[in-house]
Image 1 (tube, one colour):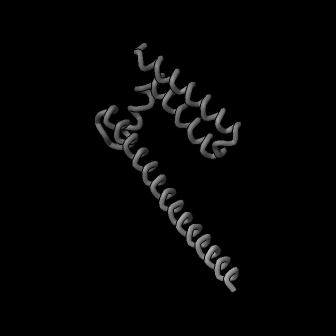
Image 2 (image 1 turned 60 degrees about the vertical axis):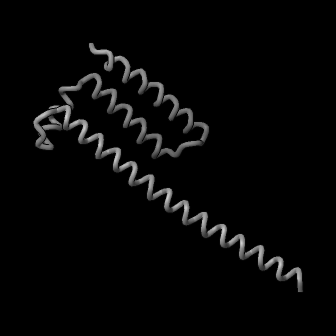
Length: 116
Protein backbone atom coordinates (compact mmCIF):
# COMPACT_ATOMS: atom_id res chain seq x y z
CA UNK A 1 0.00 0.00 0.00
CA UNK A 2 1.11 3.52 -0.77
CA UNK A 3 1.35 6.23 1.88
CA UNK A 4 -1.63 8.17 0.48
CA UNK A 5 -3.77 5.06 0.98
CA UNK A 6 -3.17 5.42 4.72
CA UNK A 7 -3.02 9.20 4.91
CA UNK A 8 -6.24 10.06 3.01
CA UNK A 9 -8.50 7.83 5.15
CA UNK A 10 -6.98 9.24 8.35
CA UNK A 11 -7.57 12.80 7.17
CA UNK A 12 -11.07 11.84 6.03
CA UNK A 13 -11.95 10.41 9.44
CA UNK A 14 -10.71 13.58 11.12
CA UNK A 15 -12.79 15.83 8.86
CA UNK A 16 -15.91 13.66 9.03
CA UNK A 17 -15.64 13.69 12.82
CA UNK A 18 -15.26 17.48 12.78
CA UNK A 19 -18.26 17.94 10.47
CA UNK A 20 -20.47 15.68 12.60
CA UNK A 21 -19.45 17.51 15.79
CA UNK A 22 -20.26 20.85 14.11
CA UNK A 23 -23.65 19.46 13.08
CA UNK A 24 -24.41 18.32 16.62
CA UNK A 25 -23.51 21.78 17.93
CA UNK A 26 -25.90 23.21 15.30
CA UNK A 27 -23.11 25.03 13.45
CA UNK A 28 -23.76 23.14 10.22
CA UNK A 29 -26.88 22.25 8.26
CA UNK A 30 -27.94 18.66 7.62
CA UNK A 31 -27.49 18.91 3.85
CA UNK A 32 -24.01 20.37 4.27
CA UNK A 33 -23.10 17.59 6.69
CA UNK A 34 -24.28 14.91 4.27
CA UNK A 35 -22.41 16.58 1.41
CA UNK A 36 -19.09 16.64 3.27
CA UNK A 37 -19.47 13.11 4.63
CA UNK A 38 -20.09 11.87 1.07
CA UNK A 39 -17.14 13.91 -0.24
CA UNK A 40 -14.69 12.52 2.29
CA UNK A 41 -16.08 9.01 1.82
CA UNK A 42 -15.51 9.30 -1.93
CA UNK A 43 -11.92 10.38 -1.35
CA UNK A 44 -11.39 7.42 0.94
CA UNK A 45 -12.85 5.06 -1.66
CA UNK A 46 -10.59 6.60 -4.31
CA UNK A 47 -7.56 6.10 -2.04
CA UNK A 48 -8.37 2.42 -1.43
CA UNK A 49 -9.47 1.60 -5.00
CA UNK A 50 -7.71 4.11 -7.24
CA UNK A 51 -7.73 2.15 -10.50
CA UNK A 52 -11.15 0.60 -10.01
CA UNK A 53 -12.68 4.08 -9.76
CA UNK A 54 -10.46 6.27 -11.94
CA UNK A 55 -10.28 4.02 -15.02
CA UNK A 56 -14.08 3.85 -15.50
CA UNK A 57 -14.30 7.63 -14.95
CA UNK A 58 -11.62 8.15 -17.61
CA UNK A 59 -13.45 5.88 -20.04
CA UNK A 60 -16.74 7.61 -19.37
CA UNK A 61 -15.23 11.03 -20.07
CA UNK A 62 -13.18 9.81 -23.03
CA UNK A 63 -9.86 10.76 -21.43
CA UNK A 64 -6.94 8.37 -21.99
CA UNK A 65 -5.22 8.86 -18.65
CA UNK A 66 -7.08 7.99 -15.48
CA UNK A 67 -5.03 10.52 -13.49
CA UNK A 68 -6.02 13.30 -15.87
CA UNK A 69 -9.65 12.24 -15.59
CA UNK A 70 -9.58 12.52 -11.79
CA UNK A 71 -7.86 15.92 -11.98
CA UNK A 72 -10.44 17.08 -14.53
CA UNK A 73 -13.35 15.93 -12.35
CA UNK A 74 -11.78 17.50 -9.24
CA UNK A 75 -11.30 20.84 -11.01
CA UNK A 76 -14.88 20.78 -12.24
CA UNK A 77 -16.08 20.01 -8.74
CA UNK A 78 -14.02 22.84 -7.24
CA UNK A 79 -15.23 25.34 -9.83
CA UNK A 80 -18.81 24.33 -9.04
CA UNK A 81 -18.24 24.94 -5.33
CA UNK A 82 -16.61 28.33 -6.02
CA UNK A 83 -19.55 29.34 -8.22
CA UNK A 84 -22.03 28.29 -5.54
CA UNK A 85 -20.12 30.13 -2.81
CA UNK A 86 -19.86 33.31 -4.87
CA UNK A 87 -23.63 33.20 -5.43
CA UNK A 88 -24.18 32.82 -1.68
CA UNK A 89 -21.84 35.74 -0.93
CA UNK A 90 -23.64 37.96 -3.45
CA UNK A 91 -26.99 37.05 -1.89
CA UNK A 92 -25.69 37.84 1.60
CA UNK A 93 -24.26 41.17 0.44
CA UNK A 94 -27.62 42.06 -1.06
CA UNK A 95 -29.44 41.12 2.14
CA UNK A 96 -27.01 43.14 4.27
CA UNK A 97 -27.46 46.17 2.01
CA UNK A 98 -31.24 45.92 2.28
CA UNK A 99 -31.05 45.54 6.06
CA UNK A 100 -28.72 48.53 6.48
CA UNK A 101 -31.01 50.68 4.35
CA UNK A 102 -34.05 49.61 6.34
CA UNK A 103 -32.31 50.34 9.64
CA UNK A 104 -31.20 53.77 8.36
CA UNK A 105 -34.75 54.61 7.24
CA UNK A 106 -36.19 53.44 10.56
CA UNK A 107 -33.71 55.58 12.51
CA UNK A 108 -34.49 58.55 10.28
CA UNK A 109 -38.21 58.11 10.97
CA UNK A 110 -37.53 57.91 14.72
CA UNK A 111 -35.49 61.12 14.76
CA UNK A 112 -38.06 62.89 12.60
CA UNK A 113 -40.94 61.87 14.90
CA UNK A 114 -38.95 62.90 18.03
CA UNK A 115 -38.34 66.39 16.62
CA UNK A 116 -42.03 66.97 16.05
